[in-house]
Length: 223
Image (cartoon, rainbow, N blue to C red; front, side, top):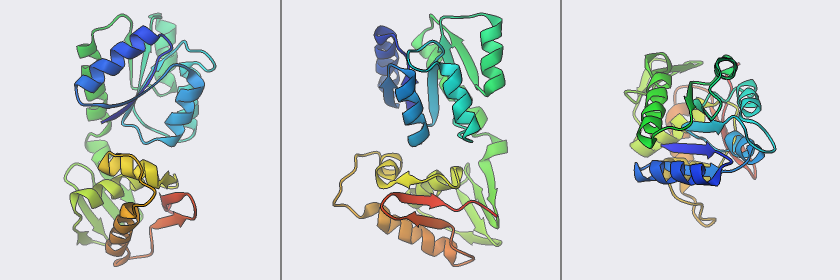
């Protein structure tokens, strides 16, 4: 699971970073809102932890920006301010949970897993894009009522692209998500797997994966 931690207090940020990594999470940590916003709009995170009070850009404005850009990644607001108005404002903007400081790392981990279960529950497991139907829980895929079998890596690639149609993913981002390692400029692994997934999907309809020359790939938005 890939998590973005945006917290300006270094001691707390290091505490969260260390605790999440000990549980096997893949963690990116930043200390200001501007860096958090850039990463959140570029990287495919499973969960984002946002401190409300940060330099350069506050957590609520980041959350508002993400939701306006149709980035529906689960967001947990983490803040020392526990007033009802702050909590309600965050939830109304689209936050998935709210955790006031101080907190125990076990509680944070439990909250992360809970929001992931909710957002990948039955209502989001079944995704329909035109004549393509993807069950993210069972990993079953159908197009035009034809069942399509994918390997684990192929499905992970399909899942990444299909979750955000129209969003461009670079080869580096795809490698990090599907294979969990850094980009090697000499590898054509991503291109090979894109070709495999395309071949299986395109057998039963029009092309769905678009190449953005010099950048990466994206899943075509439905008409």
